Amino acid sequence: MGATFELYSRAIGAESWMYRYEFSRPDLPATLQVGLIAYIYEAYPGNLNAQFDWIRFDNEVLSTSDFNQPVTALYAYPNPFKDIIHLKSQTAIDEVQVFDLSGQKLKTISAKQQSISQLSLKELSAGIYFLRIFAQDQQELIEVIKQ
Image (cartoon, rainbow, N blue to C red):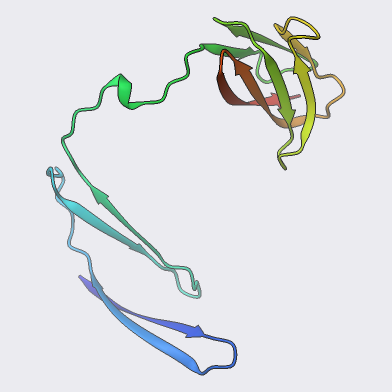
Protein backbone atom coordinates (compact mmCIF):
# COMPACT_ATOMS: atom_id res chain seq x y z
CA MET A 1 0.00 0.00 0.00
CA GLY A 2 1.67 3.24 -1.10
CA ALA A 3 0.87 6.83 -0.38
CA THR A 4 2.13 10.13 -1.78
CA PHE A 5 2.83 13.00 0.59
CA GLU A 6 3.53 16.58 -0.40
CA LEU A 7 5.66 18.41 2.13
CA TYR A 8 6.13 22.18 1.86
CA SER A 9 8.97 24.19 3.30
CA ARG A 10 9.63 27.91 3.18
CA ALA A 11 12.90 29.59 4.00
CA ILE A 12 12.94 33.26 4.98
CA GLY A 13 13.69 35.35 1.89
CA ALA A 14 13.43 32.37 -0.46
CA GLU A 15 10.73 30.74 -2.50
CA SER A 16 8.62 27.78 -1.40
CA TRP A 17 9.83 24.27 -2.06
CA MET A 18 7.66 21.25 -2.53
CA TYR A 19 8.95 17.78 -1.70
CA ARG A 20 7.12 14.74 -2.98
CA TYR A 21 7.77 11.38 -1.33
CA GLU A 22 6.35 7.96 -2.06
CA PHE A 23 6.16 5.60 0.88
CA SER A 24 5.00 2.05 0.90
CA ARG A 25 4.36 0.06 4.00
CA PRO A 26 3.98 -3.65 3.68
CA ASP A 27 1.87 -5.26 6.34
CA LEU A 28 4.14 -6.74 8.96
CA PRO A 29 3.88 -10.43 9.65
CA ALA A 30 2.17 -11.45 12.87
CA THR A 31 5.44 -13.06 14.00
CA LEU A 32 8.41 -10.76 13.51
CA GLN A 33 11.68 -12.33 12.46
CA VAL A 34 15.21 -11.65 13.68
CA GLY A 35 16.95 -9.15 11.40
CA LEU A 36 13.66 -7.62 10.20
CA ILE A 37 13.66 -3.85 10.08
CA ALA A 38 10.28 -2.15 10.19
CA TYR A 39 9.93 1.50 9.14
CA ILE A 40 7.24 3.67 10.65
CA TYR A 41 6.04 6.97 9.16
CA GLU A 42 3.46 9.19 10.81
CA ALA A 43 1.89 12.33 9.35
CA TYR A 44 -1.48 13.90 9.86
CA PRO A 45 -3.45 16.35 7.67
CA GLY A 46 -2.41 19.90 8.51
CA ASN A 47 0.55 18.73 10.58
CA LEU A 48 3.95 19.80 9.32
CA ASN A 49 5.75 17.49 11.72
CA ALA A 50 6.56 14.09 10.30
CA GLN A 51 8.11 11.32 12.33
CA PHE A 52 10.24 8.57 10.88
CA ASP A 53 11.29 5.64 13.02
CA TRP A 54 12.67 2.19 12.49
CA ILE A 55 12.73 -0.92 14.59
CA ARG A 56 15.26 -3.69 14.29
CA PHE A 57 14.75 -7.08 15.90
CA ASP A 58 17.88 -8.83 17.15
CA ASN A 59 18.46 -11.99 19.11
CA GLU A 60 21.35 -10.69 21.21
CA VAL A 61 21.44 -11.99 24.76
CA LEU A 62 21.21 -9.39 27.50
CA SER A 63 22.49 -9.85 31.00
CA THR A 64 22.07 -7.84 34.16
CA SER A 65 25.54 -6.35 33.65
CA ASP A 66 24.16 -4.63 30.54
CA PHE A 67 21.98 -2.40 32.68
CA ASN A 68 23.24 0.38 34.91
CA GLN A 69 21.25 -0.51 37.98
CA PRO A 70 21.84 1.52 41.11
CA VAL A 71 23.77 -0.13 43.90
CA THR A 72 21.29 1.08 46.48
CA ALA A 73 17.74 -0.16 46.80
CA LEU A 74 15.87 3.00 47.67
CA TYR A 75 12.24 3.38 48.66
CA ALA A 76 10.23 6.54 49.29
CA TYR A 77 6.90 6.03 51.00
CA PRO A 78 4.06 6.79 51.24
CA ASN A 79 3.77 8.13 47.73
CA PRO A 80 1.63 10.22 47.47
CA PHE A 81 2.47 11.79 50.86
CA LYS A 82 0.97 14.59 52.96
CA ASP A 83 3.74 16.35 54.92
CA ILE A 84 6.38 13.72 55.67
CA ILE A 85 7.93 11.21 53.31
CA HIS A 86 10.02 8.31 54.59
CA LEU A 87 13.16 7.08 52.86
CA LYS A 88 14.54 3.57 53.16
CA SER A 89 17.91 2.62 51.73
CA GLN A 90 20.36 -0.26 52.15
CA THR A 91 23.18 2.30 52.44
CA ALA A 92 23.44 5.61 54.25
CA ILE A 93 21.90 8.54 52.42
CA ASP A 94 24.36 11.43 52.12
CA GLU A 95 22.12 14.14 50.70
CA VAL A 96 18.63 14.76 49.31
CA GLN A 97 17.73 17.59 46.95
CA VAL A 98 14.11 18.54 46.26
CA PHE A 99 13.12 19.97 42.85
CA ASP A 100 9.85 21.23 41.41
CA LEU A 101 8.59 20.37 37.92
CA SER A 102 10.45 23.31 36.37
CA GLY A 103 13.75 21.94 37.71
CA GLN A 104 14.20 24.61 40.38
CA LYS A 105 15.98 23.31 43.48
CA LEU A 106 13.75 24.02 46.46
CA LYS A 107 15.57 22.36 49.33
CA THR A 108 18.77 20.47 50.17
CA ILE A 109 19.03 18.17 53.18
CA SER A 110 22.49 16.95 54.12
CA ALA A 111 23.32 13.96 56.31
CA LYS A 112 25.81 16.24 58.09
CA GLN A 113 22.82 18.13 59.48
CA GLN A 114 20.70 15.11 60.38
CA SER A 115 20.18 11.43 59.64
CA ILE A 116 18.03 11.18 56.57
CA SER A 117 15.30 8.60 57.02
CA GLN A 118 12.36 10.96 56.66
CA LEU A 119 11.81 14.36 55.12
CA SER A 120 9.42 17.00 56.34
CA LEU A 121 8.11 18.75 53.23
CA LYS A 122 5.05 20.39 54.78
CA GLU A 123 6.07 23.80 53.41
CA LEU A 124 5.51 22.57 49.83
CA SER A 125 2.15 22.95 48.10
CA ALA A 126 0.35 19.97 46.65
CA GLY A 127 1.95 18.80 43.41
CA ILE A 128 4.65 16.68 41.80
CA TYR A 129 8.26 16.94 42.95
CA PHE A 130 11.54 15.16 42.30
CA LEU A 131 13.95 13.93 44.94
CA ARG A 132 17.58 13.56 43.90
CA ILE A 133 19.12 11.20 46.43
CA PHE A 134 22.85 10.75 46.86
CA ALA A 135 24.04 7.57 48.58
CA GLN A 136 27.42 5.83 48.41
CA ASP A 137 28.71 7.60 45.24
CA GLN A 138 25.41 6.86 43.48
CA GLN A 139 22.47 9.11 42.78
CA GLU A 140 18.85 8.41 41.98
CA LEU A 141 16.02 10.66 40.92
CA ILE A 142 12.54 9.68 42.04
CA GLU A 143 9.19 11.36 41.48
CA VAL A 144 6.96 11.98 44.48
CA ILE A 145 3.49 13.46 44.79
CA LYS A 146 2.45 15.73 47.64
CA GLN A 147 -1.28 15.73 48.41
